[in-house]
Image (cartoon, rainbow, N blue to C red; front, side, top):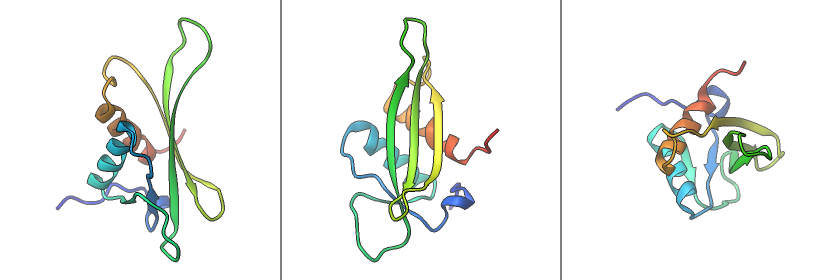
Length: 111
């Protein structure tokens, strides 16, 4: 069994991924494969939980890049405990490719 790739700041957290859309399902699957403890619903009295929010963003204009963004927010405090942004290109056209790139970016050291 491989070692966990969960960053130290997210160890001990359950990750809440409640969506059933294709991208949410793929994000949950990739996170589980990399060692995250993922849940699909809220459960009282559980470990600290971070809710996953994902969205696409692009500045207005024809030549602007589109970004796939993830935010993990602590469900008790609302504090952001994990972030990732990946620029979409021809290699990130599938839900799986986006999920892998974004989840890997969560663990990458910031600038």
